[in-house]
Structure formats: structure tokens, C-alpha cells
Image (spheres, helix red, strand yellow):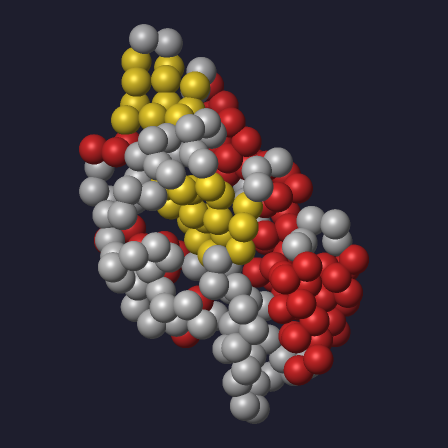
Amino acid sequence: LHGPLRLRFGEAMLDLSCLTGAVRLSEMDVTRAEEITSSAVRCVTVENETNFHELAKLQSGELLVQTSYPGTATRELLRRLTGVQEFWHFGDSDPNGFDILRVLREQTKQPFQSLHMRFRALPDAAALTPEQRKLTLALLDSPNLEPEEKAEVQKLRSADSAGRFEQESLLKPTLRHWPYYPLD
């Protein structure tokens, strides 16, 4: 985690906004917190750890949560989080990245939007695996993906490739303005 997050434990308040670096919370601490709030406008989940740390360096004031498929502590934190107006998932634009977005929506009941998750063609990219092809079909049938996200998944299927799907393939993030990377 990185950014403004407050956890209340009885009379004690843990305010993570005073920290400059990322922190990790245990499931036990998330569960026993009586209240979990943030003053951030946005909560951004970030699939890749490298990108998470690059974004944390910007000191943007956003609440950043590094997660791929969310574990119990992350799901509980996101479910109980109050005060945030927007929820975004910055994932890889491969089948698993879209599946993580689907899982975040289903399991946290938060209205996550996709961030920079667009098919980017890459000549000679590896073909989708049989498992990835199967996952794309499930994603296209999921009620938890928006039509524009399904269109991106369909592009993966049509190209039989995830293309240049890694978050790390984007330029280095800047604090110039939200959403940190040039829009593609």
C-alpha cells in the first residue's frame, strides 16, 4: 500500500499518509481495524510491483494498492474502504490482467474501472496459450466486464496474441496529470 489510509483500532489511529514509502498490512490488522478510511480521491490497484513502486515515488496523494489476484487481506481492505470516490485497476492488458479486474469487481463490490488496459499490437508476439484462449471466452461472457473491455479482449482473440501487454512497456510515469502515463 502507499498513500493516505487510516485505520482505527479503538482509541488508536494508524495514519499511513505520513509515510513516504510503501507498507504491507497483515490480514489480521485489516480484519481487526474498526474503521478503514482514505482521503484520496482515487484508489488505484496496480498489478505489477515495479510499476507500483514507480507510481509510489510520485507521491501523488492517491491510494495505491499493489495486487494481482487479490488475497483475503486485500479483498477485505477494499471492501471496507470508505471515503474514496473512484476505483481504478491498472493491470497488464493480457487475459489474466482483465481477469484480475473481473475478480476485483466481483469480490470487493467496488466499481473498478480499467486504467491503460488496451491491446497494443506487437509483431511476432507469442500466440495465446490454450488456457488464455479459454479465459478470453469466459471474459467475453462475464457480466463483470464493460463492453469496451470486452472489445479489448476480443482484439486479443482476433490477434491470437496479447501483444505488448506488460505495464512495463508503457513510458515512465509522471505526475504531470492523472492518469500518469500518456493515453494510448
